[in-house]
Image (cartoon, rainbow over all chains, first blue to last red; front, top):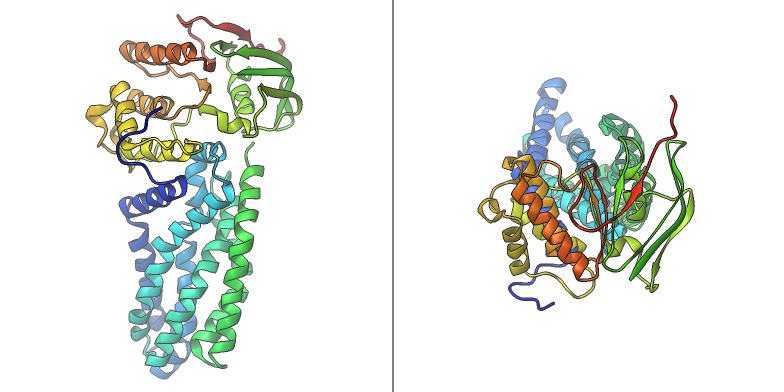
Length: 226
Length: 206
C-alpha cells in the first residue's frame, strides 16, 4: 500500500496529543485543577485566622495538601472514560505496550493538572505570606513531587476502572500511599530540615513510582477486563 | 491466512456463556454469528479479539506468526471509541495511529479517504458529540478502511445505519473478503455477502 500525505505521529504521540486536546476542550481540566487549588488555598486563612506568622509557617503544608487534593480531582476518569467508550479495548489490541500507554496517559494528566499547579504555586504562596526562599522550595518540591502523585494515583485509577463511582474509593486507596510523598514534599518545601536531603528522597520516590506504575496499572487494567 | 477455533469455552462472572464451540475460516471467508440476545455473540467476538480469557479451547492462526492475535484483528464493538470533544477526523486519525502496526502508518490522506468512503466528509470537522447515532457508527467503522488488518470482528455493524450506508459497509466488507480477508460478524439480519453461519443458542429452560 502506497502511503501519501503527511505521516501521522506514532501511536504514543497521537495519544498524548489526543489527551491534551480533550483536557483543553472539555471544561478545561487544567484550569479546573488550578481553580480548585486556589479555592483551597484561599479558604484556609479564613479557617485559621489572620495570623500571618502562623500562615507563613504552615503555608507549605497547606499548598502541598491543596496540590494533593487537586491532583486527585479528575484522576478517577483517567482510564474510566476510555474503558466506557471502548477505547481501552483498542489500546489492548494495539502493538504499543499497555505499559507505555499508561505512562503517556500519566504524562498527559500531569501536564494538564500537575504542571499548572507547580506554575501557580509561587503566586498562591504569596497569598499565604511565604518568603522568597519558601516560595522557591514549594515550587521545586511540587515540581518533582506532583508526578509521583499522578503516577501513584494512576494505579488506583486502574484498580477502580470498572467501578461506576470509583472516585471515593480511589481517594481512600491513594491517600495513604501518598503520605511519604507529602512528608518529604513538605519537609523540602518548608526547609525545617535542610532542603537537599528531603528533596532527594522526594526525587527517589518519584523515580520509584515512575518505575512501578506502568506495570502495576497495566496489570490492573488487564485483570479488570471481564 | 486461516483462523481455526476449537472447543472454545468462555465464562463470564462464573457463568458459562458458551462451551465447545468451533469454526474454521480460510482467507476470503466470512462467518455470521447469530443467536438470541444473551447467547454470547459479543462474548465470542471479544474472546477472538483477545479481550476475554478463554476458559477452554484454543484459537489458532495459520500460518503462525509472531504477533499477537489481537494485533491482526479489527474489533468494532457496541462502544464507538469516539471522544465526544474531538472531531470525527481527529478521532479517526488517533485510532488509525494507535491501530496501525509496523512501519505502515496511514497518512492524513488515508484518513480523509476513509471518511470520504463512509460519507463523513461533510461532518469530518464536527465534534463527535454532534454526530447522529448512525454517523457515529460510520465514524467507528471508518477505521476498517483507514488501517489494514486481516481479520475483522464486527458486532452488529449495520445497527443505526440508513440503507445507503448499509450498502457501503457491505461493499467494504465484500472488498475485504475479495482481497483475502476474514470477517466474523455478529448480526440478526441476513447479509447479501456469502457467509457461513454459526448459530449460538442458550440452553432452553429457565
